Image (cartoon, rainbow, N blue to C red; front, side):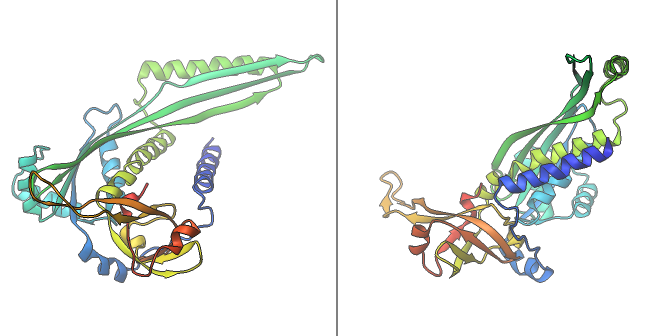
Length: 334
């Protein structure tokens, strides 16, 4: 079963790459020098805590924190957890999602944003399905499939320390159905016995509780479910905290080189946008100029060539209208 699960995971990764059109895309990791160079453009952020008090499975809060930090560590400069814990312990500070308390803690930590959240995960009761038939020659064929679904829900809230305002609040979930047992039979007696055993094991687990003794395989799938739920926040957060780059070179009639790379969190398949500035207008109520932009050209990252560069593709007609130095933003990312 373990080898089969491994094959399922590998196959899933391959499918995702193919569907995203990036099966052969290049993804260069940033160097330390590149990370240090772009750090001056990044806001500072601390992931304070993700509670799993409401989760049937305990410990998923820590898993979620790890995944959230992994999601954000290139988009922001993250404060180390040891530093966060040290400040909280020194000041005997009680963690709270109250914006006023968040501002106080954020100033203590010296960051621009604080992240709070919740994480919950559960595993459904195993579902057993069976099928069998006997052909015209009396040959028996039967099969048993047992599945369960891992459900994960993550909420994230980001507080701006300077204003005390909640600038982001959302909930995302992920469901992943796994095959935990699958077998075919040519012997009807063996099939009948296996069916009894399959249902018996499912009933025992139901009586004991889904998570009384979660095995390593279950734990791995729960971790994958949490990671999938956290990953679903990427597009919204990239759009909320955009980075700007410039077109450095037109590589071909459909591709350009841009000074945004993996050090900024850019990945193959991400969408970039060139905005079109509308004529200036004045708000009659405030007298302020209205700075209005609309998306003009969308580009898709093809290869991340370094920590500070990527190639992006678009329509030939759009590329022709772009100039060297044109500003490109991650605000239109997926």
